[in-house]
Length: 427
Ligand code: KE4
Image (cartoon, rainbow, N blue to C red):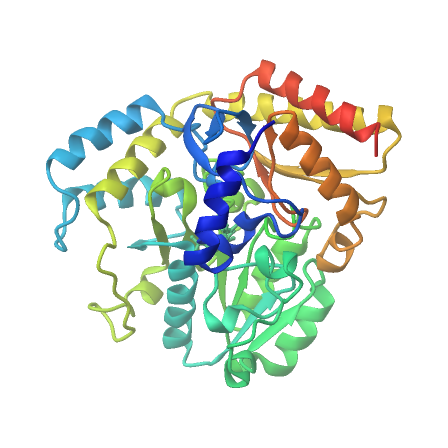
């Protein structure tokens, strides 16, 4: 693989943009080397500026569940753009996307479109605080809910990867209202809530944690959390920015049968364009401006292009057998990678929820932030580099999830597993 053009572009980018990237994890800091610059993408493949092609399991960190440049999405966007890009006024497209999402997430009565997952979670928390009149929030170690100040406390994703779970620039006063507990530890959360429920507005959780890799809830954990928060009038927010329409069409809440008070979405519902959303019970959402006093706004919220991409994506996802096909491909990859590691004699733990997954280089069951960190990141880096050289693009960090799309084929999986085995046996 030659990466001359990528390296030249990266050098120039570093003169203009912090770390040469517009989002930290893209800089390959966790795996060493320099990032590849992408020229285009189609289906399950991405093509870099040096003409190399890769099977893509990053899929823009989740949104491209149909695969890149799906013809129906591209054609719909081509038509939509002829009508302009944004009006700053309501359109019927926002109603259409809201209807599709609310039908798939019956726990929500109303929904507000925003432009990112960060906006969705920070706004949901503000609405929960406005609704309860309480200030504190509970989050879980390793969960990442975007980069709003009060949430960068033992955050996952880039914050974990960069080993700076508590970011500078966040005033102590903000962090003081954020309680961070271990994921899957119901005793810890019971203790905190019993002692301090009068000041706790909400619990925000990734029902499947996609920002320390892929960590599944222990059986009964989400159910206990639901009961506890209901008993104490605490708003339960499911951050399904990553799990939404990915763990199943109805997200993790449908998969595990839990109805949160609020849900945050993003990624898939924008079909690759910037969309986030938050919603919930009408008594909470009626607090949101202009219906209620909790202020939240956005210049490009609900813009017609992003709505169009989201609508087309969900229309295709809602077709019968879509998730059966996604499940078959994902299960094929899971089996292949587990067998390859076993054959190569490398200790790994593979976890998957629908079409999001993670392969940890550890011999410890991964159930939370602490156990995820037992993974051998040096081995992971070698695995990452070997896969990239063999034309397979996985997340450039052990603490990120991988994703499958409708465009991935059995042939892609075979090539991926063959490459993985070759690298694993050299580790
Ligand atoms: P954005 O603001 O990046 O759209 O969404 C923030 C967010 C919120 N909640 C969850 C569960 C998320 O996974 C994210 C963002 N995910 C990361 C990937 N781990 C985005 C990739 C990046 O930061 O570049």
